[in-house]
Amino acid sequence: MSEDKDAVDAITAQWFAVRPELDTAPMAVFGRIYRIAKAMGDAMEECYQRFGISRGEFDVVATLRRSGAPYTLSPRQLSATLMLTTGGMTGRLDKLEKAGLLCRKPDPHDRRGLQVTITDRGLALIDEAVGAGLEVQRAALTGLTDEEVAQLTGLLRKLLAGV
Amino acid sequence: MSEDKDAVDAITAQWFAVRPELDTAPMAVFGRIYRIAKAMGDAMEECYQRFGISRGEFDVVATLRRSGAPYTLSPRQLSATLMLTTGGMTGRLDKLEKAGLLCRKPDPHDRRGLQVTITDRGLALIDEAVGAGLEVQRAALTGLTDEEVAQLTGLLRKLLAGV
DNA sequence: GGTAAGTAGCTTACCGCTAAGCTACTTACG
DNA sequence: CGTAAGTAGCTTAGCGGTAAGCTACTTACC
Image 1 (cartoon, rainbow over the protein chains, first blue to last red):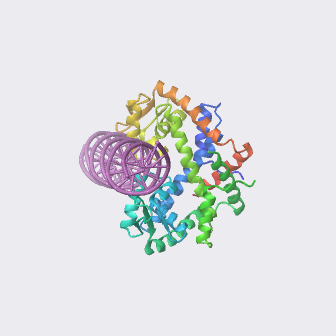
Image 2: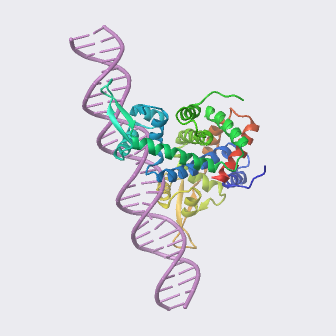
Image 3: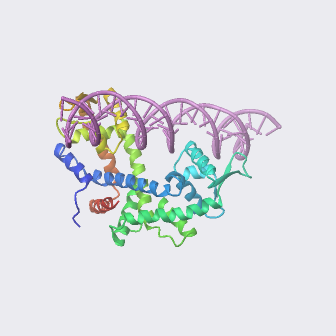
């Protein structure tokens, strides 16, 4: 169970040396969460690069894909799901439409709105990219047993509920 | 032990509906890590705003503070520690120097280099801000017992080592 | 001692995001 | 019916980051 010291251990040790009264337990959790998020984010970016899309663009097409047939959502639904402003959404849709992975059509029921749909090419690409992305994530988990992964998932669910 | 369904559970359920053969266990871990990192990052940004600095600027001054007296590091040491390019570092140092929280002096031993040091004002501010930041993080952990926090820390250390 | 390679920090160009403001349209209500 | 309020999507300005290139300086080697 005892593991090597890592970069976060070094930071908490430094704090203990100059401010021994501080409780650095929260730092030990969130410091690692930030680093894991950054490292894995970079790894995913690199993975999706093979498919010619960025991680943010992947998220858009993946959201449409997992919504099921007919793979159609409004820009507003997408920006709400992806926690993105409409400005950011417009930019992503522009690129993905230009790349031929999705298309924008007017909403027949509301002339203010649009419907965003995956193209056949987008569907084929995302089905491959999702598998590749999961494989990268799975590889990062090889140091943990299945039981540990389940335990970690439970603890993270609890933590996410509290933040 | 059974918890409510959260946003990540909804996403994995959607994937299961359209691609039941996919193993979404990695997604359940990293999806939550991304969300926790984003939510806590926003919360920290808001916390440090009270002290007139951004989270990135906090990290610079905090790195100097925890390095111990005489609270002096080179821009290169700082940018390496903070995983930032020299361009980004220059920008942060410019702002912090203008705000009077640190100062740049020539390195007496290497005429190419600089020494960055906290000012008295910077030291006082960071000692307050660190405490406030830890308090925000501690509050986010209230849903977990001390034992669970320790367990989570161990699992995250293991995961960080693998990514 | 002179030259080549490496290193430190700054500048510039660019990229993606947010915040705020815009137009166009729908909906609710007197 | 007409007006006010709300909503959808786009545009613009600004911010913070990276990547690449620059100068200045040190170090290693012949």
